[in-house]
Image (cartoon, rainbow, N blue to C red):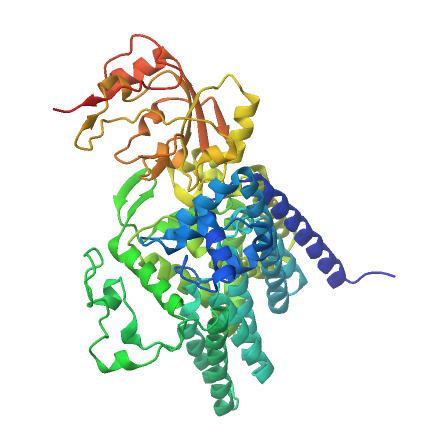
Amino acid sequence: MKMSTGGVVRITAGVMVFIHLGLILYGATKHSPSLDEVGHLAAGVSHWRSGCFTLYCVNPPLVRLIATAPVVCMETRNEWEERAILSGNRPEFNCGARLIEMHGSRAFSFFTIARWACAPFSCLGAYICFRWARDLYGPAAGLMSVVLWCFSPNILAHAQMITPDLGATALGVLTCYMFWRWLRARSWEGAYAAGLTLGLAQLCKTTFILLYALWPAVWLWWCLSRTGNGVREVKQLVMMLALSLFVINLGYGFEGTLLPLKSYRFLSRALSGHNATAAPGPSTQNRFADIAVGRLPVPLPANYVLGIDHQKRDFEIGLRSYLGGRWKHRGWWYYYLYALAVKVPLGTWGILGLGLVVTSASMLRNHARLDVLTLLGPPLLIVVFVSSQTGFNHHLRYVLPAFPFAFIFCGAAAHDVIRRGTGLKVLAGGALAWSVLSSLCCYPHCLSYFNELAGGPIHGHNHLVDSNIDWGQDILYLKDWVDLHPEASPLRLACFSMFDPTAAGVNFTAPNPLRASFDGRKLIPEDELGPSPGWYAVSVSVLRGLEFPLYDGRGGRISSGDGAFTYFQHFEPVARAGYSIYIYHITLDEANRVRRGLGLPELLGDLPAGGASEREDTLP
């Protein structure tokens, strides 16, 4: 019996999702814990054991609860949780580092299991891309959208981690799809589904709080163009939003729900009424404390509210940001546009451009423009809102929830191209193949992907650092390289990581910093500054000047501030661990060549292989 075109498309889409799942599961076994994963794992385990959501409150807990559900049964040593009660900023990271320290290499199996538990999020996102594009534009559109999702390097990268970005992306497009279905049918069942999924999306990432403003506005637009029972629809919309609030509170176990607004102690200037950089006063941390609105109960969990406050404070204070080889305090309004230009495959950009050319007219006819508003309103709002937060720019992942909507829009291009002749079909097919092959050429190092316009992942650090290329994910690859090259011992390492690389079996000491550091008593001698002969491994973020407390291999920390290790830019690496850790073998002649250029005295002979001498000069 001959299979219908729709049946072939569904089977092909299923195969794509199956391949996608395999790529995720394999990649999840290969990478060391990224910076944020260290905190999320500890926080998730703590949530399950204590029922408290204080740790990592800047992100809602749903994804890490799912990720750590199987880990709670495996992780039985809980002494690390003592750090959860310590005061200080972001204690979840200390907790996570301590957890890894206590369990050693066994801890990496916890992360693998947790990552596998999150894989269904990505499969869900793929399905919704297929379903929504098919419903709008037909089977070919659904297939185009699901292929773009399944082989997007940015989707693959975050699907291999327990951070909330991919879960939020999948549930975000799911709830918008449910809202679109409700707009079409305006039934109570559709309203329930939209409200439930909106609450789940909020439990992944607070970014989707924007939908509470967008959805009523979209509904009003639909009302102006169609007839219907306005009173019933208002009731459904109110119920939808109320149900989402109930789901949010349920996800937190109603922890701190309905506390009076005046009872909170805020940190951000927006909510406290005081400068975010100033030391908080004993009783002046709430601008609502002495006004009537402060007596109103807040219909949200306490840690959900405090998480928004903490995130707002970070943007108010501002942090150093990097873009295109330049550092500055705070960020750029165009950061995410630049990041998208270099991190999205050029083939995908080609399909988007083709979609804009061939579909713009048909999508703006009659009621189709309302479908377009529902589809493109959320991603445009997300990109505009995130771009407006210029306190710091570190992560393209903040706009990851916009990706599936773009993939669905690309499906519209496939729909129109099929009807316009062979030339456009070849062009669209070639762009799709280019996008897939470009992504797979970088796999499994998807986090470090950069397109050909940016020079590929090898030159990615010229454009972006941090979670865009180097998030501590390649330490296990470094361990494999060291095991295969015993001659590279002793190794000196400057690694951007939230846990001590010795837990992965990497034995190392720290490289010499570029400049002397003072603590009131000690001064590093000049022959222990800057380049010296030996084997080195340096994270590309540190190479570009990221300021971060680095592990020194001896149980302590050193600072990478003030460009401490940027002098490695004067050397050519001999190998790489993934695309985020460069490995150098520096000879005496090479070291002296660079030292002369830096104004440092030349070395007369090889320093001890372990690095700089142990002597310390004392300041008078």
